[in-house]
Amino acid sequence: MQAAAATPKRRTGVNIFDESRPMWRSMALFLVPLILSNIMQSAASLISSIYLGRLIGVHALASVSAIFPILFFLISFLIGLSNGSTVLIGQAFGAQDQHTMKKVAGTTLGVSFWLGVVVALIGVLFSHQLLIWIDTPPDILADSTLYAQSIFASSPIFFSYLVYTTFLRGTGDSQTPFYFLIVSTVITLVVTPALIRGWFGLPTLGIEAAAASFVVSNAIGFAGLLTYLHFKRHALRFDTETFFDALQIDWKIFAKVVRIGVPTGLQIVMISLAEIAVLSFVNRFGSSATAAYGAVNQIVSYVQFPAISISIAASIFGAQCIGARREDKLASVVHSGVALSYVIGGVIIAVCYAFAWNILGWFITAPSTLGIAHGLLMITLWSYLLFGNSAVISGVMRASGYVIWPTFNGIFAIWGVEVPAAYILMHFYGLRGVWMGYPIAFAVVLTMQTLLYTLVWKKRTHARLV
Image (cartoon, rainbow, N blue to C red; front, side, top):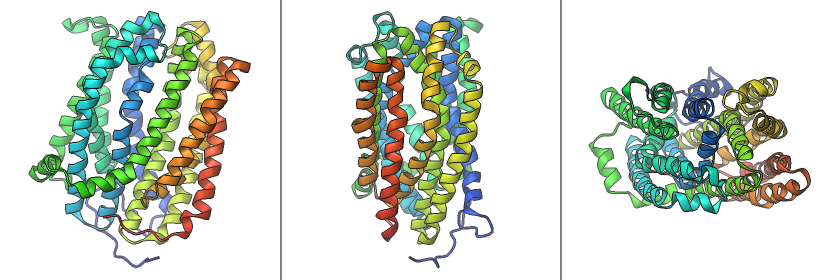
């Protein structure tokens, strides 16, 4: 291992090579705005769900919940590309290679925009049929279709915004994306109820208000981010060079992004397909169960955010260490990430257990649906500590471009364990049995990733990919 590379100079972001600060503290500084950013992204969805459940009813909440797995499936490849580009940008940043950083960003941005166009077309044309295929209850099918079509139509803007925030994080800058996600969330907070009820002379859109506020908030947030980066003359601002890089895709760089990102995207596809399978199990119990599923997913998403954020931070820090030829710091990245995952995740999970009835009551009023959601939450919540541990380990391995086996482990845990367990157990325990598959799968994947990291990855030497 090489440990003598010069410490890169940084204009923005956290300096992980500052020897006066322990790694866990550097990671915590990076994590605060990153976790808050992820919370802000989900807050738009959560706030909309609360408004829909309280101002319209369970029917509206179920209508929105029904399309979540389909949306997750269609953006999975984009998430994979984002992860691939973040690794390459992190390594280029560690190596102080600004030209390569912009090449990676421009190439990924161009591909993401056109992927968004394709997803928009698919979503608008086939949302109704897709919802039928997953056994969406007939009483919410029409509203779910309208909502889905509106969300999918905004994909080119949403996809471009999403990947741009990941570019900045690859340089250690988690603050700038956070500022503009605050803007997006505030817009959602104001616009959604106004459009549901038709305040201030606005049209009364009902369930469509959630989709409209999503589109408006993302468009304004993205425009604001690009404007800010331009005036700050940020290294990753959208300038002429980035524009032409987006038009003239560098296929060598894209091949590396794909090599890292596609296995990650494939795993996310498998997760989303598993969620569709699980939702089809849940739908057999009626629209109240579907609404409960949506409510539990909202809470679980907040429990997952710290784990996912810490995994992203570990991957970025690992990539920067490899780019700067500081492999001696990789073990510290792993240990810090795992410790933070248990501490932060443990606190959040304890709060959710203590106040579960109150939190669920924010967007569910029907007593029977509330009871179903509470029971499901009690079964699965604790196991996201295991999920966080495995996510950090796999994130660091992916920082070196080592993605095939971590991906295989994740897919096996989902399709070889979670879905079969959920299907079998629901015949014995009903709806509760569906949720039992989650903790079982998380325990299996943690065991597999730990063995892979300890017995294989730690013994390898990791070179720059760019």
